[in-house]
Picture 1 (cartoon, rainbow, N blue to C red):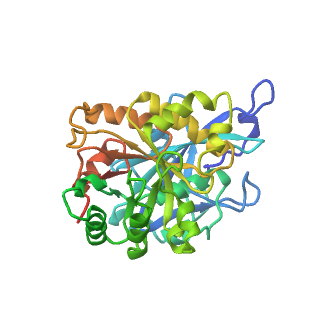
Picture 2 (picture 1 turned 180 degrees about the vertical axis):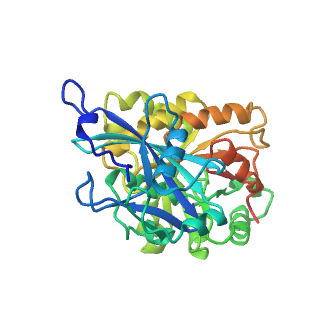
Picture 3 (picture 1 turned 90 degrees about the horizontal axis):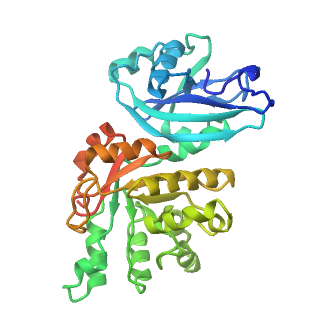
Length: 371
C-alpha cells in the first residue's frame, strides 16, 4: 500500500528537510464494511493498517491519482463511482511530512461482491474488510495521520438543529412545549445541535438529553452560550456528558480567532480541549480561518475539527434578508475546506445526495429535519 510513502530520497530538499508529499487517500466502503490494507514491517509505519491510497504525481489531480492508485493496488475501478471529499490533513512524522487528501467512496453491490474475498492486492499487500464499528473502536491500528479520518467518519448524513425557545413563545409554557416537541420529534439515534439562547434553559436541555439517551448532542462553545458540559458534569449524571460529541463555534467566533492564531496560542488553548469541534462558515474568510484552526488544533494534539456548517445554500425563512450562496458558490467554498462540509440553509434531508454531488458530506437544518 502506498498511503504512507517509503522512499526517503524522494522526500528531501537540498537542505535535507523532508518536503511535503501529497497523497490521495481512498476510504472505500460498502455499507458498513471498510477496506483496509496492511503495511509490512519493512515499510515506513509498518505493521499498521491503512486506507488504500498513493502519491499524487505532478500535474495530477487528487481524484485522478485516487482512481489510478486504487486500480493499480486493488483492481477496483472507481471511474463511475461518486467520490466524496472528506478533507485534507498534514502530518509530520519527523522523517517524513505527508499531506493527505481524503475521499470517501461507496462501492456498488457488484463491486463489493467481486472484491470482498480478495485477501491480497495486486502489489501483494494484505487486504481486509472490517466493520465500521470495529474501525471506529480502534481495533485496527492506523498511522497517526489517519486518526482524524476516523473522527470524520463518525459524522452522520443528517444533523438536526433544535428550534429556539422563541418558536414556542405563544404557548403558556414555552419551555415545556419545547421539551415535549423535541422529545417526540427527534429521530432515533440522531445527532442534535441543541441551540438554545435562553440563559435559564439548562434544565430543559438536560432533561431532553436524559429523556432521549439515544441522541448524540452538539453543544455551543462554552464562551458563546450558556449551555456546556460543565453544567451536566456537576449534576452527577455522567450519561449526559457522554452524549456530547462535539462543540460548535459560530462564524463570528471563528473570524475573531483568525487574527489571533498567528500571534498567540492562547486563543486556541481557550477552546474546548476534550471535544472535537464543528464550526460555522459563510464565506472564504471563514473557510480559511477554519483551515488554519484545524491545523493548529492538530499541531497542539487537540481533538480535530470534524465538520463545518456551510450556509446558507438556499434562501431561508429564518434569515430572509441573507443572500444565499447558491450551489455553484457553495461548491467552490466546499472545495477549499480541509474538513468535511455540511450543507445548511433551505435544505431538507432528501437533499443529502445533491449536497454530496456538490462536495459536501451531509445536511443539517431545523424545519424539515424533525419527524
